[in-house]
Length: 352
Image (cartoon, rainbow, N blue to C red):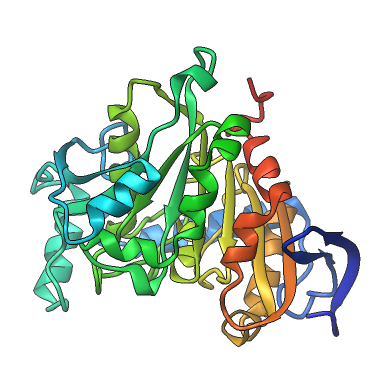
């Protein structure tokens, strides 16, 4: 990706990886030049036009609404073969988040019923399994703990949590004593059901998809349940690989202001996702220069970065001079990435 349309500006070297940072230039063909005021006006016009044709009405953003903390329960997860060993090795707990039934008159319930009537491939799930690492309270000096949400890739979909250990490096990294001594935090891994209906399709900053709402209810539900130590909701972070990286774009854009930093890996945003005009977010994308799954969609990345920066957000891009799709193993080893992530707060206040 060192060719046309890009300006190389920083070379970062470490013992295990070499990443190249570049600034965003020359994307006028992808998105016309707009001032921040012009973009904000265009954004609101786009939002108004969509809501005008939305037969279900505006999304409910009140506390306790779907995606904003809808109620549910945490239930135990029965270990599958090999899961106990993996959990104990990384000191993880496992559970289910089970969301309470939605009121039938709610917008979300009507949308789900409407999509079910269209004959979706699979009924909408009522529960999501998760893995959770809990930090040592002694490392936090009485402060609440940040929470890192990890969204897995296509190969880890389904209800069998043992599949999450196909990509084990993030567990090795974040749960290690050295990492926790520097960045004590929770690590939450959500396992998305196979063939989840409507996942990331057509979701926007003003209308999350039903599955995005469900995932965020699970994230907030698990976070609320942690009291020893409590979760610092001003320091929620999200990262994910490939399919899960696309999910990170969705989480960051459809719930603006919720995640202090977002790190998609080997993933591009969907073209429909809008950037919030006042809460564009802090982003850092990593991918391999020889990864066609990402580079073929680089114009979409460029357009998204332009929208973020026009609104005052930050969007860094780093590449590895490698072939193939797996950029995540090197990304998890990048000390600079983790330092950057844990330096961010949702409201911009200094880290405690």
